[in-house]
Length: 108
Image (cartoon, rainbow, N blue to C red; front, side):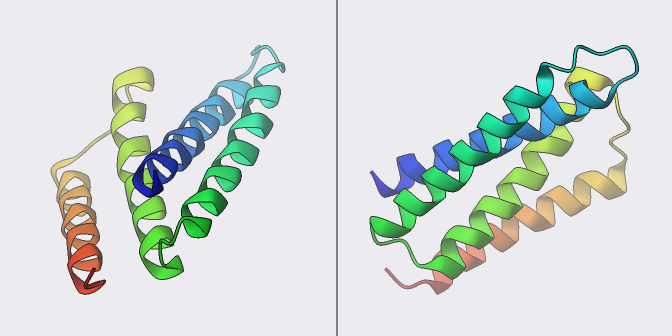
């Protein structure tokens, strides 16, 4: 369940961030801010559950933030046609490598 909670935390945070982008657009329905609030609260709740289930804070926070950054960048490229340069893609690859190193270093 630990990893399910962490995945839910990541997906909730990414959803909230994408909703924030929608809410900030000119002429947008401000009801998107409800999605933002619910998403961030859910994200922190799921992160807390992952920690309560035994995941170390350094590992959980590292994976949560790294995956959030990478998934948000990819989703923004697909949904909002934002730039995703080769340099940015290399950064995402480095983030992925960092997540793997954090997990390996945790020594389960």
